[in-house]
Image 1 (cartoon, helix red, strand yellow):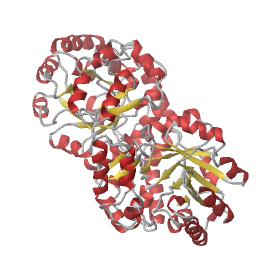
Image 2 (image 1 turned 90 degrees about the vertical axis):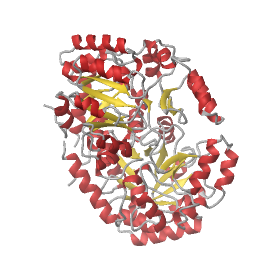
Image 3 (image 1 turned 90 degrees about the horizontal axis):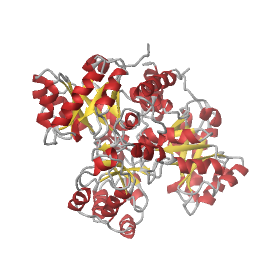
Image 4 (image 1 turned 120 degrees about the horizontal axis):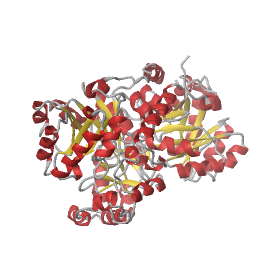
Length: 316
Length: 316
């Protein structure tokens, strides 16, 4: 039996490992989430890129593929126009764990709790973390600057953010951003986290829906190949490509938010991450990309994470 | 006896703890460096803010105050016009450990090694770390995005940088940026570091030369109160104040590098950090500022770091 310093999250979700596969737009559908639950983790369907009927298909498929459907969760960006419908469809299919993000934790927490769900909100600062706790969530994800995709404005790194958040909260804290192996999982526990949420490393598995071209680009990524961009609009960490260069050019000349929104247009993320246009698509990934060079199955990945974690804590 | 997973740095410098007090302009003079050596750490005089004659005074004083003068080192920014003179004065006074930064590791490493010194170079990327190793340095400091003061352009956080650097080097790696207590020291070891370098936390001691106003401002700092600025000129992490606002205004409108240099002018850092003008001075600090609320002696600090480290590793 592997020893983790905190059981708060494994007990809250009734899962074997304190490892959460992050909800990721265009990447974490039924196959990835179900495989994650089957490997002893929490598996999250990223609903932010799905219309309600597509989410329903993924829910049905994930439940049929999972040996532990109680460990299936849905990530819902609260500013998304289908948020309410997505919540109701998920509840209808028996989902009891919701990760909410990109919006006020006050908006749906009571509704979800009244419907018997467990709620976790994603935060990038201790101030927002306190608001989450006040809103009644069961736990928070504290996500640092190095994380892929959408991010906070304060640029607080995981190493600094976790103690800032654990210092002010009574509820469990899940560390995210920069976690990719047993070493970083052990580091997160040293900092006081109760569990970890892992994105890019789960993106780089056989079961994720990320296009093969996107996976190949991550294998080739060098340490300076991701950057937090669009800080005037919605901060997002991107893999550098032609699209990134255009964003950089606009930002260098101090272009207004509207120019960024126009460049972003529609469907850039789908184009890049799902359809594999790695030149002109938006590629959301974390800084850990530089250290990821393989595409195992989820079962192989989780086994290696736990083994590496054991080796790491045995150093002490 | 406290167990640290690596003895490479404690053996290289013949020190009790794998803890290095960072060289900091206007902050780490004779008193701080000597106190750090007396507490079992490596103590570094920050020569980047000293003319050669002032450095000589600090060297003499530090040697007289230290019970372990072999653990006194000097940090020399290689682009500083007095670099060569500072190296020679330090060698004359028996200094055998040099931390070099802000310049090519090729510039002085051979000269220092030929004079019997141990050389450590500060790096913010694995590419530069490899160049340091090729140049013959004995170890590197890998300093993440969350660190105070001057920083790299790639914005790689400590959590991501340490594995990137340890993956490619054979020589010891010292983690810096975001380290402030036993928890973060343990986290750095989990990531594969051989030691830690700590800046802001040592700035916040009785023996540092930072002005009391500056220390008070750090006690009041909130999590979003530092930011990496002046990326077009020399990236530097600052505490937010009136000077910071002016930099931000220039950057928001895409002003050229020259405007930033003009605003920076001369003596801004001295004004803020040594003389205590916390409104218009440049205040170089790390993201950990938000979690630091006291000003102990160095001896008290190091004792608490080691105790907290022991408690942390006993969680596993």
